[in-house]
Length: 293
Image 1 (cartoon, helix red, strand yellow):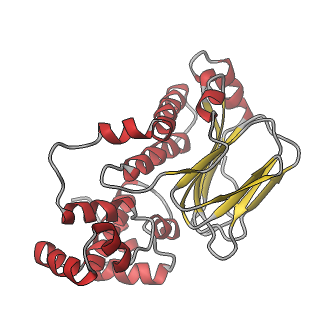
Image 2: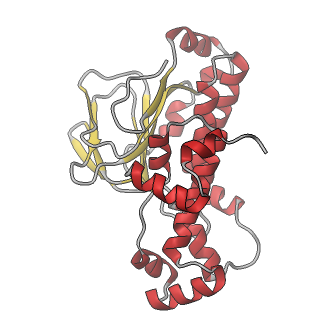
């Protein structure tokens, strides 16, 4: 069952009570299970206050913009690329910053292992992109959990989704191990590293200045070397990566176009459509309707 849309591109699922009862009685699922899951892009004026505590943990991962949360009178500021887990059974409130509202992935969860995953997470934990980061992998993992739950409530499907959820939380709680497991032998050169940074920030708008700071080279030198190696300027190449990711979403999901816009860091659907048409030679809707090759 899905919640009513409140933000452009919003997606969410609330698991029915009947399914929650099945999970709590299941020896596997009772250890850790999701009760609700969602994605809120550019969630202006998002605000929740729960003076009466709930029996679930609330996980929020901010991938763009800023927000805040308050527990027992202590307020914490939340920056881009950070997550936190609100404890069960304690009143809390949280919301987006008015001037720069956050984009968040969120999950309500419970189970006998929930408190262990949530331990020491009632404060913001920063997950900055870097050469060894695997943020896109984590986002894809969230999407697989969401799509599995969205496809139905078979017991095997739910068990699969919850096993993925164990792994998803593990990518955050054991960050060093997660990153080192994905490292390749050999050093990346600066262009490979810059492209990796682009992929890790595909949901955001980044500037040439930010790419320059990340690479450690001047804007002019980075642009020159990047153009020589790829045939494109850095920002033009970033747009190509955005369109490529949009194609993957159009091919593999039934997301609405306004949601795909946010998933590739473009808030204006008209600009997204123009960019997509320029790169692919057809509109996003035409691309989705094209016959199978």
